[in-house]
Length: 303
Length: 268
Image (tube, rainbow over all chains, first blue to last red; front, side, top):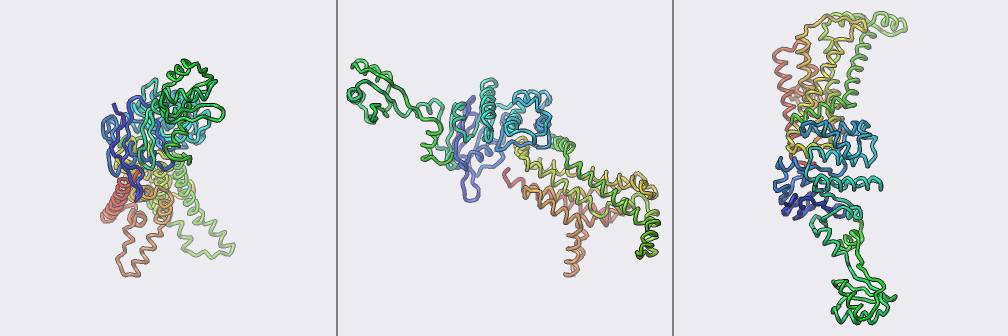
């Protein structure tokens, strides 16, 4: 089932289209990495999904219901941009207020659970203004978790966190996905971190969806060449070119052969062995998500 | 909507700004009563005269005038100047603005997508805020004169409650100005400036001058600070009551409509 589905979702501010004909699909159980440069339209998309902004055109559906449907909204938790927290109040009090707002049954029990889940029980009485950035982000996720949502929308939840905070947030999101079966849409600039948790990606460029891809598809696409070293490079090259009809390959000065055509590595190994060529080293060279994203975006500008 | 109001009242209870506003209100009234007591004290006047100050008979009679007042008349001397409006306007502005400055407005509008619920809740909250302020103001201005040697004649409880109600009406409507301006600008600056200017009587003075210059009727009497000062008397008659009700509800409707329009139009 599509947990999130948008149809030509568009938002214009003045003459500028922040989001344009966006078709986004998130499946149940996904951790959906939403990637784009600054100003690409990520936050606007999330605001549209949360009902904080109204679309100029198009529609968005959550659990197959319109975004403004109260039943659908009860199943969403969201952290958009910075966590919205009253700085003079404690972490617990911020959660209590939101529980009141949601009209939850037994709010104290839920608040206790959330504080334990996000690891803030020890500092629950401290005013939020004394919290570190990481603690505020975790409390923001805690607010999003109140009411037991099935879908979490998180906008840059690891922005400004130190490495320890990033690790804690990553573990928290993975735990929520695995243990509670939460579907999570998370936008982030930190692509290396996103690649550790995402099962599906959406790349947004200038308000338009440039590509949606699963983690497996990405792994295949990122495998950009097969490299091999043999004891007889020239013989190996001639053999493989003839046998596999290679069109895109090159020989490096130090004798490493790089094959850019899609080819089965095991078949290559077998053909070389039958021809009596000894393979010293063979493997797939992969791009990381960042390299792939930059190549997809057409340059190494700031993400 | 009532969940939202419940949340806001709980937040008000924990709000430092709210207690600061209440503290300033009480301190101003105490200072005012202390000043009145001091400058009407015969020994003080004698001492000033011996120092060469020109003190005439009317200043000696002031004490008697204050002593002849009822509790409510004395309270109105303290509260009628419009500073309750000013402080209430600032308080409501700061309270509403904290939703925007903290980013909590995103949580609120996410959980309660109907924007009119937010505005209606804040209208009720402004009523609670100004209500607490008026009750405190009236209570302090009734209770503190004996501490400074002033003993106005006792007023009836019913009279006190009536006075508090009629004073609350323009205070509440004035607080909605802060709400509307904060929703419009997403900042507290304009709300505070307008609360100081209007609550301090500047708009009344300016409008009075303009109306006189242009030969218009006295439009300034319909401004809320003017209503609080001249209509909310200790024993308002029917015409005063109509004026208070009409002006308060009229301005409240205007500010509420402006707030609703702004919230309906703008994204969060």
